[in-house]
Amino acid sequence: HGSAQAQTLLRSCSKQMWELSKSARYCRLVQHALELASEEQQVALVSELQTRIIEATMDPHANHVVQRAIELMRPGAIPFVLSELLDHRKGIPDLARHRYGCRVLERIIEHFPQDELDGLVDRMQPDARNLIGHPFGNF
Image (cartoon, rainbow, N blue to C red; front, top):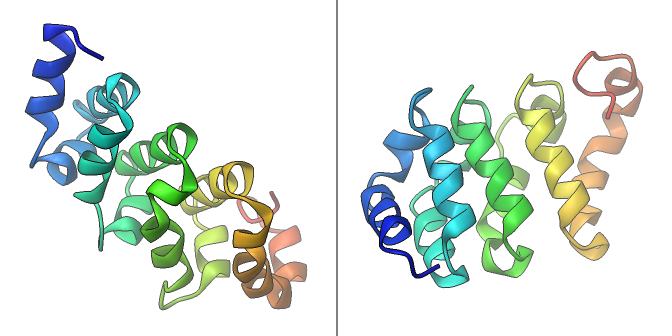
């Protein structure tokens, strides 16, 4: 956490998370910054993606940052991630059928507590038959 190199990396990501996360060149750097950060620093960085979780989930590069945040952080530290996914205007089945959206949903299912997943599962069940046969929605 305390190395000068880590602190420099964290500072360089601060206030630029969205732009860096969308970049093929820098999205891995952002993921590495999250790995080196304290929980407080992770929250500060990932909070910069608040209101952009759907857009990030569907982005070919930023989805990796969202996935890494879900893997590294306590669900209670990033409740907005799940709530923004649940509020997606096209619905959870739309995300489940998306090339990158399905990966983010998989990470949520792997890392969030069961009681927080009920809303997600409820929204997927009506479309279960279609999802089962879909190349991305069959997780």
